[in-house]
Amino acid sequence: MIEEVSIWGWPLQAGGLLKAEFSSRSFSIISGRVAEWSNVEAKYFIRKASNSSWEQGKWTASVVQLDPNTWILEYRRSFLMDNPKPVSAAGEFLKFRLTREIKKMMQEFWLLTVFGSQDFFYTERSIPIPT
Image (tube, rainbow, N blue to C red; front, side, top):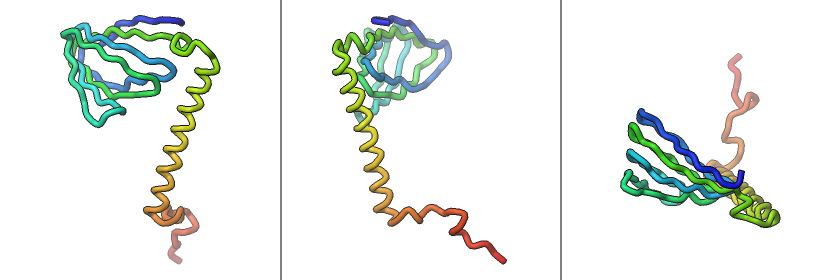
């Protein structure tokens, strides 16, 4: 797949997660209204059918709620088109994975400093059994 265009929607109110991985995605609202909560910014957007379009960058996600009878046109390019050099694509993927692992380690570090030690969580041996 080099380029893909799709139209999707639902006659009832719906919601879900839009995520872009290796390549960015572009959306245009054909009819209806979309509320979007992006992971990039700490606020939400209301997008209406009056020529509302937006692009979701690589490695991002957002939660969306579609009003009843909302239809969206989506355009997606292959990550090979965005990164014509395989080394560049591999480097970007590695950067994403390392960033995610570092964030996870930082979160675990802060949990350890808050709770003092890993003994905070109960294990079978640490619970006294009444006799």
